[in-house]
Every structure is written in structure tokens, then in C-alpha cells.
Image 1 (cartoon, rainbow, N blue to C red):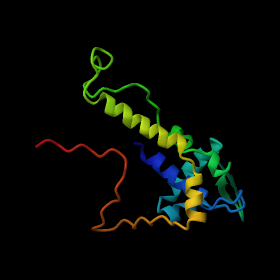
Image 2: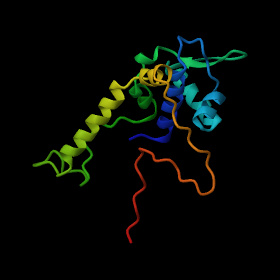
Image 3: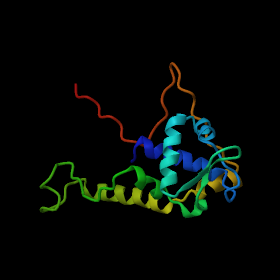
Image 4: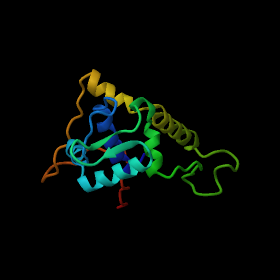
Length: 167
């Protein structure tokens, strides 16, 4: 669905949405990285990009940190997604060029169109208000990702998996 930068940017933005109180509470890149168990340098880079895009604001010094630039109900997942992902409106046929658009569509065509439509709906209709409400009003707390260690399985991701090698 999307790459690691998008995933981590959404994680950082969701943390800022959870504590959103009009911009009074600010979190440092270290706070966000620790809360979401992400690498601080990567979070710092993401926050810089989100700031340049006008999605977060940051202040330096004591009492500084980051907050959402607008109320969370005004920021969609798509606002973050479009910063890190290339939007491709072409219909990519699994059979390669020259099939889709010529004659009958392939057997997967309608299913792929439906998947794209569903993903677009999620990205454009979901705001960061969902995270604020879940945290502040419903008391929900995200499960902390276990620290990487020997014998620990990585968490399930919604990114495409690497294809299995044929035997």
C-alpha cells in the first residue's frame, strides 16, 4: 500500500494527533521516536519534511518541539501519503502493456480497480482526528512494538511482501 517513509510519517503524525490540544503540547523528535519505537534521525528527517509541507510546526529550545499545524480533523492520511509516494493513475495490467484498454479487460481488472478505489477512500476520508479521539476520548493506547531482538518476529505490515522464489 505504501512505503516505510509514509508508514513512519503517519506514525509520527498520529502521535502528534493523540496529544493535540490546540498546539500547547509539543513533542520532540526523541519523544515521538521513543513512543513509536522508531529511529530518531529518521523521525527528525520526516518531521522536517512534514514541517516544510505545512503539516507540523516546530520550535527550538526549552519547551519546544512539534505539534500539528492544523487541527487533526483538517489533515488526512492522503496529505501525508502524497509527500512520500508517487501517485500513479495508470491502470497497471499484470499482463503488461497492450492488454488493458484493448478488447475485454483482464480477469483481475475490476478487482484491482476496486482495491485502488478502497485505498483512495481510506487515504482521503481518514483524518488524524481518528487518532486524537481514540487516544483522548476513548482511552485507547496503541500496542507498543516490541524492541527488536533475537527470536522476535517482525510485526505484520501492510506493505507488499517480497515474492517467494520459485523452486
